[in-house]
Length: 360
Image 1: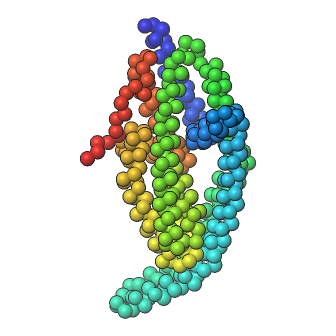
Image 2: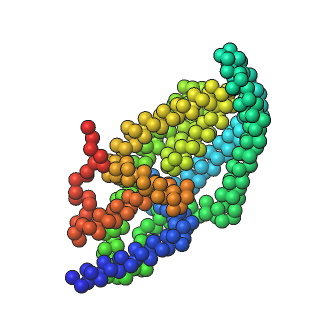
Image 3: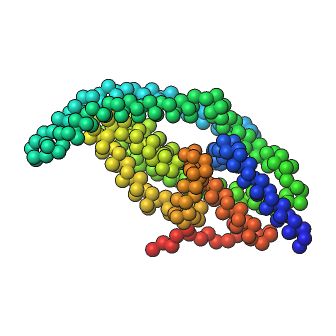
């Protein structure tokens, strides 16, 4: 009993130390968290490549399979950025050059509507104020966005972090056992068994999160890409990919995707922009109401209230970047607490799954 109590006290003090380090090293925690999520997302692909081709085919080593997957991912992301960034920049420039004519047509149509319905005395002063202030507002908005992008991406530290992300994920994929053994050396030997149990629970929680989130992103990207193609968007495929990846970042991802859809639609006409944004809002609500709670509830076993609070807490502590890690972090905490509360030697895999919310 005394040994068990001492082990639990050591774990408690270890948890306190970890929380302090998480607060002090917030940027490093975000980088490691992203690399862990990336490794878990790519793990099924690495496992599939590692298997032998045919019954007697050669088996690829884990390190080689991880290298192939990571190089392929970096190449695909680089190709997509090289393809998407010039197109989005051209569309933004086209929108900026055509914005005065679009604004003039909108002002004329609004004034004609006001004159036809006897609202000119109220609409004309508001229209004049908008016409005078909108150019300055757009300039300030562009300057603010450019400054924010420069602060986030212009520093050497941010560039190095982006370069280290695939490297850390590669180490986790290729040498996960060695990384685990090396990390255990920082823990007293008496606590190794308990730490191993906790790591197993965290592993199951992260796998469940990745499966559920992958399904939600795939459904959202495919449905929205098809809808934009039907609406005649010139970059429906790229916007579908963006919408799918935007699901990884709650709230902020929605805002970024909506702005991109609006800019792409405005390159055609304002009606396309309005229809695209309205379609995105409707599809996002439908999937968020009927698909996401069932999928994430099945894999994470969390109530939507806990999911929302976790996301808000992650954004409050780590900023917008923490919203991505909030849900897997909550799943990890839930798994750790459940493992510590369960009897030694038992695992959560032996228990039947329970739904997050009662279904009608």
